[in-house]
Every structure is written in C-alpha cells, then in structure tokens.
Image 1 (spheres, rainbow, N blue to C red):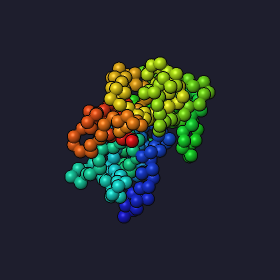
Image 2 (cartoon, rainbow, N blue to C red; image 1 turned 135 degrees about the horizontal axis):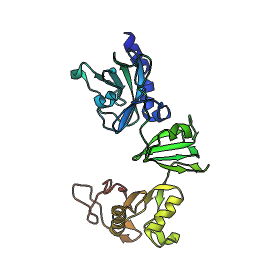
Image 3 (cartoon, one colour; image 1 turned 180 degrees about the vertical axis):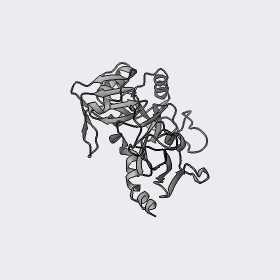
Image 4 (cartoon, rainbow, N blue to C red; image 1 turned 90 degrees about the vertical axis):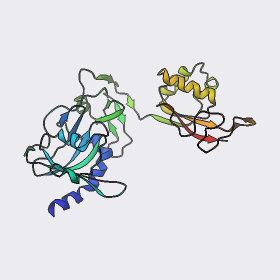
Length: 293
C-alpha cells in the first residue's frame, strides 16, 4: 500500500518532467550507446528517472542503461486515458509501458543490484553536436527565463543551463560557438509571408538571398502565401539541393483576384491543378497547409 501511495504522489511530477527534464539532468548518469537514463533509483527506493536518448526506445533498453538488475519496476501515467502504464523486470507478461520519448520522465523502483547510495552510475553525459555558450539565452520559460548555454544533439535541444553545466557535454566532435555575450532567442515563425515567392518586392534577386535575409532577421519558419505549381516546384528543388534552410508552410490558392488557379476537390482524387493535397508533407521543409480564396 505504501508503494502505491508513493507512485500516485509522484504522478504529476513525472508528467511535468516530460517537457522540463532538460533543466534537471544531473552531471552523473547511467549511459550506453546513444542514450542514457538519468536519476536511476537506488536499491529499494523510488525516483523520477529521465530518458535522454532517441525517441521510440523500448523501456527495457532504456532502463538497462541503469545497469543489469538495477530497476525492478517503472510506471508512467498516460496523459490521454489517465491509465497507469507499467513495466516489471520479472513479470514481462504484464508490461504495457510504451516506447519512451526523448526527455520523458518515468517513475522507477531501484532493484536489488542498484547502488544503495547513488542515484546513478558515474559517467559523462552524452556528447552534444553543437554547443552555444557565453551568451544570454532567452528561454521563454517563466521558471528559468535566462541561461548561458544551449547544447544540441541531432535536431533536438538536449540541455540548457550555465556554461559549466552545458560545456560538460562537449567532446572531440562537438562544434563550440562562442556567443561573446550576445543574446540567443528561439526562432520566430512568420504566419503570413512572401519571403520567397515574391522576393523581388523586398529587393532580393534570388531565392537563396531571400532565405538568408529571413534567417538573419530571426525567422526559422515562414508561411508562403501563396504558391502555385511553379513556386512549389522551386521550393522542392531548393530543399533537394539543401538550400531551403528554413521550414515553409506553402498555401495553395484557388484564385488571386480574377485569376483562377483551379478548384480543389476534397476527395481521394488530386486537385486538378496540383499533384498534392493540402496537409500533404512533400518534403521535410516545405509543407502544404491550406487553401485560400
């Protein structure tokens, strides 16, 4: 009964850690391969552990980074159904805990072979690909409004904190960017833009020049209003050449004034004037979003 009360008490904290865990990753963690489980529980104790690794990793693989026999049980509350998902080391037939996402928090019970005094095995955190440091990082998080450094691995921010904390994740292959006291902001999203298709109106002669100008102004995602087939083909070509360095929501038009582009037919057939339908993701960067008239 005491064990059950402890699980319920920690439920809300575990859910919150799914989005905030990167603020509290300890310098010591159990690590293997491409991921690590941080804050592994000591023997016979409960803790909120955080998976720092690829999304889609099985609970068994993630928990194994705490060490063989170091975890007896793990729980997570499904945010949709409010049902407890569980994992037991010795009762696999009862397990229904789904694969873990990066920086997901779960409740774990330390096994008999876990360290009785340490919450995790010593070792360096996973190496970052890029670290921005010596700056003022505006996080947009009211609990932690500013930081000094940011670490990135792959396409994810994996740590935000002080220079000392984040630089601990550097290694031989890490690119270090000294901000020299400058301010680092999250990327902006332009919800109504003509950066690329109507670039001449802003004085840009090429699409690459227009993209560079957008990035220099802090825009990392733009909504192009609008695209026709020629403009969509240009976006796809830029992306295939790795020249489309921001995310683009491309809006399909029905008309522009008296000029008619065609009629979208919401069925299994394709529009008469495009080879794609709205919401189709045609490449990683350009994405079709809507029809306007």
